[in-house]
Length: 469
Ligand SMILES: Nc1ncnc2c1ncn2[C@@H]1O[C@H](COP(=O)(O)OP(=O)(O)OP(=O)(O)O)[C@@H](O)[C@H]1O
Ligand SMILES: [Mg+2]
Image 1 (cartoon, rainbow, N blue to C red):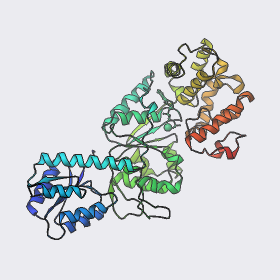
Image 2 (image 1 turned 180 degrees about the vertical axis):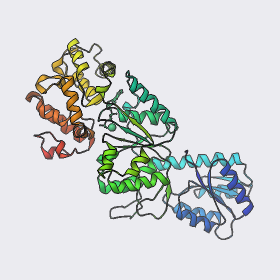
Image 3 (image 1 turned 45 degrees about the vertical axis):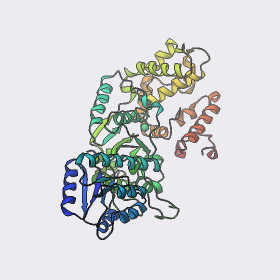
Image 4 (image 1 turned 90 degrees about the vertical axis):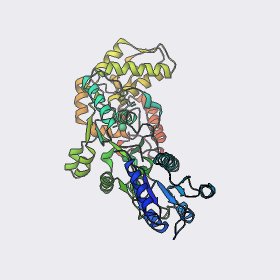
């Protein structure tokens, strides 16, 4: 479903009003007719419109007076005046009072369509600038998805196909497997690609802020709401909203999100007016949602609504063919990034990386190579420069690591979700003393740079509570 531009057609001439509304509806606009300036104001108080086509000469409230009132709305639609005056004087006057443009009657459908679309585009850009839109950071967005394993290649192909539809997608898989990467791929291959994807980490949003962050709030809606604030839904209008860690969304918010997904409409906190937003949702979680549903921690109806297209990213240990390709890819990336063109792995280190079970998946592999590339004194990275493989830090064989990963995926995985942290807390705790100080410092730096606080239970021992800010 593509977003339809909502147009309010205001003209006291019933024939003309009907004709314009019908023509625009056929051109795929969502039109509502209003027979007078007063009727238009009532409709505008009830629901949001993108554009108003406003006749100038009307008996009860003139077009210019209506324009003045409309401009008072905090999220005013763009107004295009309809004038019978071919001398242009009234149209120009209206533009001085804030109309987007004017059309001389009778306007052709082409003329109307062009100026309505332009007006809508302007309004959308303004809205996005004024909103708390948090476009997904660029940077990594352009990196390709490495895959050699056939199941992974099939998954990427499925994601590309899903991108062409507007269906909701649910991405599941252990932490670090590449759910974010797939979400970005889907957005970048969709018809919404020209708009930035908005990402929200549901696990990082305090419960009390959920509603106003999602739906926005009116000025004065609650103590401290000193100005109108547009929420994430408005910021994502016409684009994709990526709900990361959806399993952490509080139950009360789940109900409200479901309502929006079903109706396409919502209300800002403190508002009595419905608004539309055309949002494509991609959700991701490393939790087992059906199990969460059974435990009554996740709503079954929301699960089914999100699970329209379901893509499960397998853990790295189940696609060993990807390991060599990923190693080469990241080595190359860090050769360039750190300007170390001759950097490579020793044969032993490479073999060990191939057989390691990667409980932290691609993220662990990537961080491991980044750290080694940064600290290796020589161009050849040896096994002992890779903490995951170091026997002193509890280095693991394929079998034992695979078993461990199966046994502890959720808690270990969740520790990773607070950031692109270079290591898990458990890894820090188990690190040999000589790594300990710098790893603790890195943990704290990661907390600070992401402005997120991991659950205290995820903190490694010896981290000072006060230093995690
Ligand atoms: N197939 C891949 N090709 C290249 N890079 C990848 C691939 N999969 C993952 N990565 C990289 O691995 C890291 C982790 O991936 P990502 O953030 O997508 O994991 P995730 O599944 O979203 O994890 P979490 O559940 O913790 O949010 C990122 O740096 C990403 O760029
Ligand atoms: Mg993620």
